[in-house]
Amino acid sequence: MVLPEGRAEVIIRYWLTGLLICVIGLTIVQQFDKRNAHYTDQVAVLMYHHLHEEDTSSSTIKPELFRQQLAYLQSKGHHFITLDQFKRFLGGAEVPDNAVLVTFDDGYESFYTLGVPILKELQIPAVNFIITETLDHPQEDTPPKMSREQITAMTTGSDLIDAECHTHAFHGKREDGKAYLVQEAGETDQQYIDRMLADTRTCKANVEQADPHQVDTMAYPFGISDKNTAIAVQAAGIRYGFTIRPLMATRGVDPYRIPRINAGAPQVSPEGLEAIIAQKVVAVRKTSR
Image 1: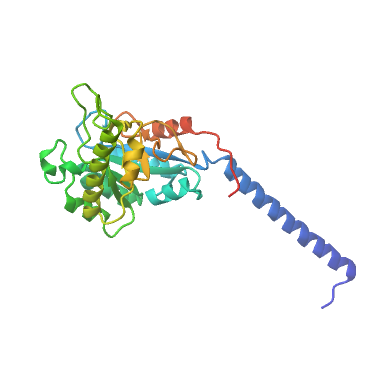
Image 2 (image 1 turned 120 degrees about the vertical axis):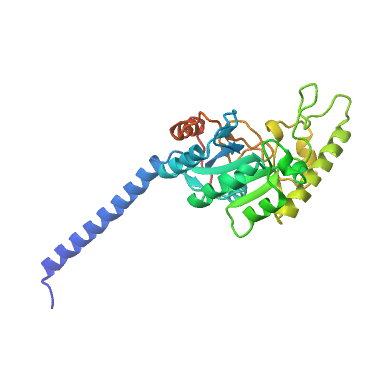
């Protein structure tokens, strides 16, 4: 069937107009989605410690609150990433808008018994920074710590859970109130570096024994580091160090001074956590790579 010349032109014109409208509409939708992203090209690194039903200490939250926080962020369009994704981001790779990394300190048993089931239920990855000095007597500590067997169990057969270093024997403070991680009075720079190097190597070896992989990440106890800390831990094979500075992590951050937002306090509601993250968002200038 051959259409009259005039009618064919009309049909083509309508078809082209419809196609143009679809393209414009798709572009508007994409731009709208971008404008409505909470943040882009940065990561909210969340910090937790202990989960417990009754304990009301400042670094402990109830398991249900922990679950509600994560589920709420998911419902609001936040995307949870792995530690490996975060490392690649620092190296120049993209991350989803509204990216979140979940971290835990100290290696408490409550992470294994209460936290991991929630993380697996919601399919959210996390990393736990382990104090390895207690691995030989985990139940003697208060609160109890994870055993080597529990660390192996939670990291085996799944890419969700990672184990890294929180020092071997330096999670504490001296009589003068200064953290063990800080250089002592009268201690030379080289003595401090040697002391940190030995402790970090011990921590790495213990974590790698429980979770066979290359350990290259550490969270500093109390978020404290000294002028020579990065030199020492880098010599031991650490490539990333986490603090407790409450900021967003951008691509240009010092890899040995990565900030984290405290989400593990009992007063942090799901809505409150999202508001805290929103307050920390920074303007990031996109660069071509």
